Amino acid sequence: MHSLQIFITKKEDRDDVRDKIEEFLLEYQNTHWDWYEFGGRWSNIFDGETTVPLKSAMSKIEEMINDKEKQIVKLKKTCSEILNGTTEEKKFMWGYKLKKLGELMSDDYMSDPIVYNLEDYSAWAVPKNLDDYDVTIVDIHS
Image (cartoon, rainbow, N blue to C red; front, side, top):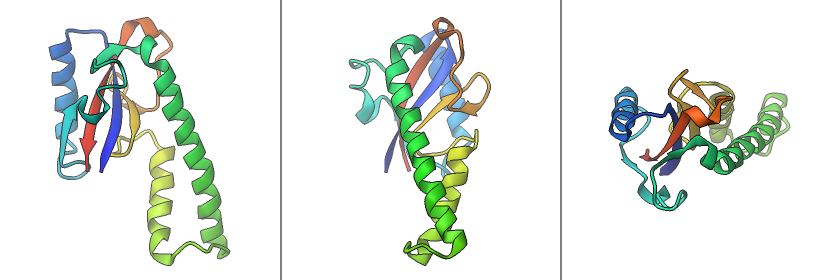
């Protein structure tokens, strides 16, 4: 499965940014992903650029954050039904749904679509001063 991941970094030389992202991703090789590619199937999101200023990426980031919030609401309902015994969800999916809710509510890195701030190592944390940061698109395959 391919996942869009957007990494937030301070404005630097683009080669340094890629090195920083690759160093971070190596920690999760074979546990969260099989392979990755800068841009990949998502390279058309920012007109063919894989690294752009954070300010110009905010509409896509806000869309991803809204999608995440909708998923959390839906999963909370499902998990509540699981815990109350009122769900029609198949039993073999219970653990997956509970795990997915925990992942979405944490600041931890995951292999799903994510906006990840490499400056403070937290998920979904967008810095206040947009002008000092870039974002880089990575296509993660898990």
